[in-house]
Image (cartoon, rainbow, N blue to C red):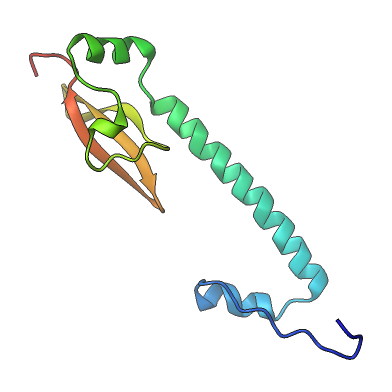
Length: 122
């Protein structure tokens, strides 16, 4: 780029005005600080999401019980369950009623799909 040429202002990503407008008023140095913080915050949030998942995901014995009952634990066998990022968890729908569900994040929300009751009698 020629020294006299001025680069065009970059297009803002599809973010709400309450995020973009204050950023555009910041100095380059402050923007670099914000960018570094945003990267660190995103990393931390991903770690927290993984920790949540690890705490909720069923143990190998539960998966074995599903296999013994001929219930698939393959997300490909379920219509809406993504193959990446989904896991099996146990939900209590009302006191004393426990069910296996697929669970996954879809943007900022959690999605789930019913699999089976935890015990055959429920």
